[in-house]
Length: 199
Length: 242
Image (cartoon, rainbow over all chains, first blue to last red; front, side, top):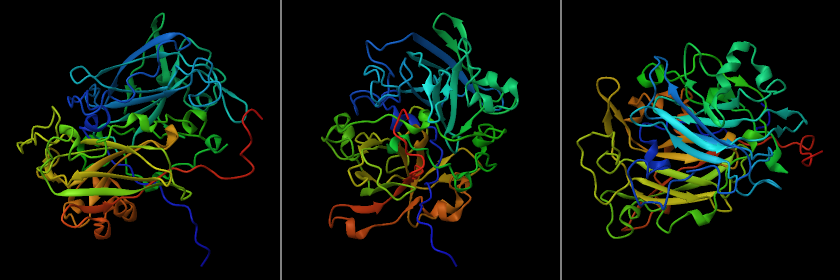
């Protein structure tokens, strides 16, 4: 016998299910008036510093079908690479956004500002990126990934550097379509499967 | 200081299998390649915070919030309460807790729910609250009904309440479901079965809590939740910028 460890075990996840919108974005789900507005409608307020950008895309299941029922959340630093809540962060960059795949087309759109380079604990620098969390019916534990940008210098990013199969890095790059307009498709499984994260 | 400490790695063996053949939708919605693992960074160690200013007076009362207090929802009145802790056993304070559920007949107020059990005109099915300085939360609701769902030929969801938790770091984000003590449908449910570790599944089952019920008013169920913790070591808690 040994002493007993006193750490607890994280509660098990369960799928968000097809009706996640009721709990997280009720106005989107048609429950008008329960809350004044849905949480996380925008990750920025008027006056947020930095380049305004729009990212659109779809989330495809293993058959290539664009999912109509996914909900996404994003979290990001401000234009200077400082996370909201920390000293000297831009008060107009709230950083958190909630958005859903369109119920008819599956397309999502995120309007935000491009985040800056973020310094890590060991002093290295992460290329501009937006953290993404995806939940839906059939996803038993929420999937984390990141949106990087194909028009930024990503060569020194410590996370991207860990991707052994270099072509897979492409799955984390938002593709510039026009100034400030990007496309970022997510593939849950199979050909071109997005790199999902455990960190 | 502590909000810069690394998160404890997620114990994936204590989490549901992403691919579970009896839960058919998961078959095409689970990654087939391994996740990319590394130590958490500021992107996961920080997260949105929501103040009490967000909350309306009835946000944690699903019996009344849909009608703004005018008429109560139909169903067995219950209070659900518990604590949100981290893996170090410390209370997670000031953390948003969101819930959603079916009505007493097992029907969701959602465009995609076509089950013929009737909607309750007085029940919306969502609520939210924020944990106090002890990590404690509570809300009032009605016990949701079980309902059939299209999966295998005759699958039924056990009675459950969906929970969404933020903690204080994006990497702690968790969505789960609370089941009810004694529900025989739990052991038949392919979604519950995605949690392979029996003790972990048992921890999703809220016990009846008579001592916290109110005579002639409501029953109580207790549901404690644990979120990922942060490593606690003097070797890592350097002030920012050093």
